[in-house]
Figure (tube, helix red, strand yellow):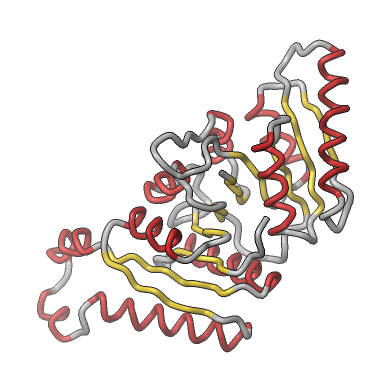
Length: 276
């Protein structure tokens, strides 16, 4: 994986976005990366809400885009002072998913960090998060949990493909201090010989990855439906983050998020790293 120089975090100042910013700061500090705060102002949504507010009060206050710019710049300055990081603020206008994709593509982004939804304790993904994760231009970290510390345990849902190995490699590079686990779900009723061969092959992958990790990478083969197996194993390990792969690496129309990854994203309250 190339060095981690740029981390973009999208914020709308909701609780979910605040959790995403906190996590992005932690990862940026680990790597000495530039942290780029991005807010996308949806003009059409604002116009639709204008009738809800008192026009006379609005006339006395700065326009909402000016207020948000100030808030974004204040947050950027505060984070730079607190952390010593290079923090940049970018204000954009348009539809959120398109503007975020354009910004990510223009800045050689190593990681995009976003909240799963405005209220992170609720299962599922918000509409913007759903659209962004379907066609990522870079690894995307979906944040649900308020930051306590760096990730201690990371569980990667893998098969024996090159794409799965890449996903685990990216996770190790991003979160080097964590204990990394590889989990391969064969499905219920797998033959004993198939289980043994899969475990042998997966252990080889784990050994090859251990050279770049601070702790030996562990491997396990599970005989259950993939999504359920991964969700249950994440709970058993108290994993801080689950890693899933994305089929198709160009972020375009041919990219597909597999059914297992979709189910994990919809049914876990843990952070999820999606790697294309």
